[in-house]
Image (cartoon, rainbow, N blue to C red; front, side, top):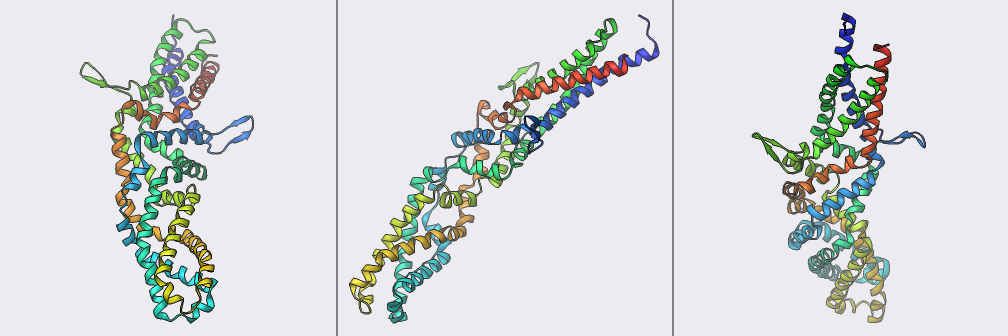
Length: 406
């Protein structure tokens, strides 16, 4: 078959165009995983990035791995030393206890409270303050014993992801940045290699359907191969002095640091852990804990100071208001305790050391479990990415035939 110069350049262009098609379909597939964050179109026609669309399901899988393999929340809380927590909170918790005493007394027995000398008031304040450290210790022990019921890590994570739709994108893009670059580049390399085969076949046999079929094959195969090479083989294989393993799995040490940093700075912060424990999922249990422990403090303090108080009010009137005083104290401490606890956050950060602990656990994960950090991003509707790649490749092949070989 005689080739003109024009024919020569047409055939030479095939592997380069095929390489571009491979790169473009892989690039488009990656973009479709993450964008758009919100659905665009008119249902059922339109598109939303696979990760944003499946964020709840993907986040749920990640939390399952987190709680099963990486963190035992009850162990973390058990590391807190109540004595140190009391020291950190001393000033703020004493201020709250004094405020609470004034509030309940002025609210329930103002006429009696006005008559009581400052010296007696001081003894009441002191009596309460002396019991607060033990009460705080008991509260922390009770929280630790109930922490699995009080802190729902899955809800915490899902609420965070729901309020920040782009967060999962950020986590997967940063942890899998090298893999996504590989997917793009591999499309170019594999596409070019397929194009060389296509060029040879087209020289000898070039019906109208050849280029579209090869385009479809390139779009499909480059996406499929790239995904396979990221996660397989799981265990290292040595051949001719070379080590072969899934690209993501080879980066376990690097990914461990990146993932731990993101998770502990964006989701599992000390502030968020305590907020969900005290004010969200654990609020009812905490209320019961406070009702019990604050009641004990009030009873013990009353036993100590009732002789002084009885000089200004008869016993019947004082005891009548005791339960009301307990209720006011209970609700006041419920409202203020989480604010006081913020003073202990720096200490809790040091003790929990979540970033380093999670990083170490990830580094020690078996490869089968480690791939679960990134795999959910691909598993959700992975077939759509491959099929879309094939369709785009087929369309590129049709265009190539029409514009270059017609």
